[in-house]
Image 1 (spheres, helix red, strand yellow):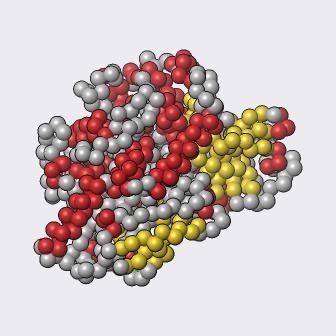
Image 2 (cartoon, protein in one colour):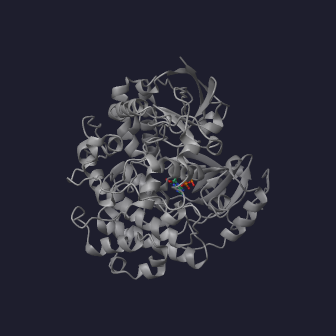
Image 3 (cartoon, helix red, strand yellow):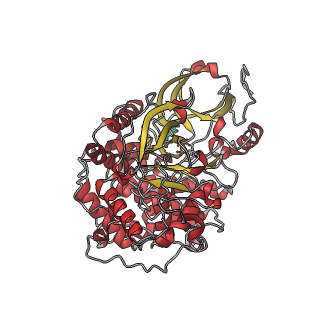
Length: 600
Ligand SMILES: Nc1ncnc2c1ncn2[C@@H]1O[C@H](COP(=O)(O)OP(=O)(O)OP(=O)(O)O)[C@@H](O)[C@H]1O
């Protein structure tokens, strides 16, 4: 315990004597980042006037009790590697755990890409960043630790170009009871980086899951975003499980070396036993020639404003996005589509819900594409929908474009830009989860309509006019055929996305839904989302039969104001009574908003 010991609820270990555990010894300055569980501040350690980072984790979100945290913190204090951020100390302040760590002046690689390199870094830079990250990973694995959250947002850089892997240690262990990213029952994060064996029910995973995430991170650094990042969680899950692994394309990614492509391909092998260990990967020729980041990153970090100003700028952009909710929907949609792409790591979801829903939706879904087709679509879509300026700003979407989002519902869009037809057979299926009897979940009474909300709400990708019109078409088709079965046939709709948005995206987006599900069977009632039109909600949040109070998730932490949601064309018989109220005083943190829906 520190010298003053004015800690309210116990204190964690890992405290080198030079730092105290007295919160009064730290002056929190600017916010420099926020994640799903935490806000990170630049701070001054007053006794020595030393700049540090203070990560304030919300203890109320945690599964673990404080004793466990302390115990784990002691174990984590043994972690000691130049490429792993190590906590100086940690202690509890009211309902938060403060983790004191070195301040990484340039923030995360995700920061850097968003601000200045939206299309990714050059190969020498990528090689040096990845090599340092891999050294960290090799060390952690040698210690018997799995990181479980390797991504650009967790690779931190300081002004000298030193690279450290963050989000490991006390904060990680708090969420780490075999299922790292779980907090209460809500998975926090995005499946984009997750290995197939992690996403697949009933399969175990080990440290090789980090190698997969490492490969995805390599692609993220190369392109400025992770593969499949434009898709909502369930679709990412399905694509990860069903499609060929993503990779660098030999033709399209000509600017990258063969060695880089090979290295990525080695990581992104679905069979975890065939992936190399971190130790072996470090011996790959791609890393042998990698230069130290201090030299490759030299010129990159000059002329950038201080981290906190960048963060502020990104937050302002978020606020502007929120203001879009008041725009006419067409403008809103175009702009929010661009936001959707920007906020790639902002999804929050319940992984079990996701798996359950994936298994249900699968049967009715139009056939998916092969990875090559998907990649082609992504690339084509990027070309046509977004023209990024060197400063990293995206132009708004061309609504006439046959985007990958609309392609799931628009038969005309199933022909790929490269001319290939979507070719996966309907018999391809998710392994164990794909064969749930559909009637159990999706059968409904004709005419019973229920509006749902929840999940990130934004006039995002699914709210495109095209998609909505196809939702209508689907409605009409189902009715015309006299079917009493309605299915959640739209993978681009959000799932039960029960909490606020992340974090590393700065965007805290609020996304809209597409697709719908009507009445729900018992098993699914707790978790399966009822979706129609722009809004969706988990059934556990709402009495579906009545006028409802529905939590919309993922409002920006910083927004104290309610958002006017407008009736979407696809809402059909339902209207949104736009009287949002914050659920509690902590709403700026929790981002929970309530709306009322009425049947009209
Ligand atoms: N030591 C640090 N110095 C500077 N910036 C930091 C530091 N630690 C974290 N950050 C910034 O804060 C952001 C959020 O931190 P972190 O990822 O640890 O939070 P989190 O809640 O665990 O996030 P998530 O679970 O979404 O990964 C990081 O992406 C990074 O940009």
